Image 1 (cartoon, rainbow, N blue to C red):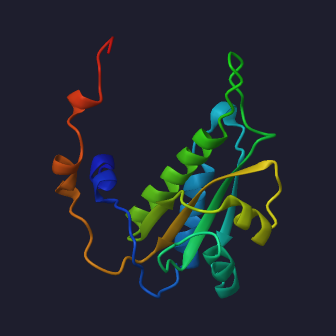
Image 2 (cartoon, rainbow, N blue to C red):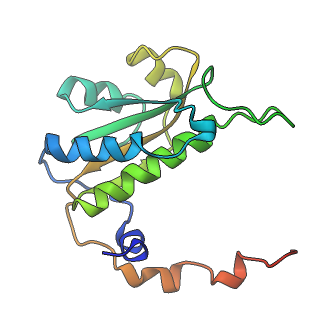
Amino acid sequence: MGFLELAKKRYSVRKYKDIPVEPEKLEQILEAGRVAPTGANKQPQRLIVVQSREGLEKLGKAARFYGAPCVVIVCSDTAETWERPYDGKKLTDIDASIVTDHMMLQATELGLGTLWICWFDPKVLRAEFDIPDQLEIVNLLAIGYADGEPQSPDRHEKMRKPLGGTVFRETL
């Protein structure tokens, strides 16, 4: 499967089967996150894998994850991230997003569904999982087997702006 075919196949899953993610598939997904590029190769990502019933109950206090059997809390270490010298922009959110995207696409290739979640209470997550202040909680990644019909890869023709609506050559 080519990259664009894979990217178009991926969709946001909001209902999961009650089937655990196989350890070997999870390791491949985590490896995809490990090899993702980060600013100056600082690798500030810190991934908290939540799969136990107890862990998912704690997670449910802070976010809705639609019954996924596995959720990765994606954090970035603000003390280890690269900082742009001109304006001090730290790449915590950017690095974590690249890592998340790599994991999402790897999960898709393995036949798993994902949901990128940003609607969560960081204070609750921080307390429930003892996450130190230097880690920015960027997003959650729900992973599991989708329950229901997948969205059509052709949906992008109707749901996305054409290239001319987002791409500009040399000037806006």
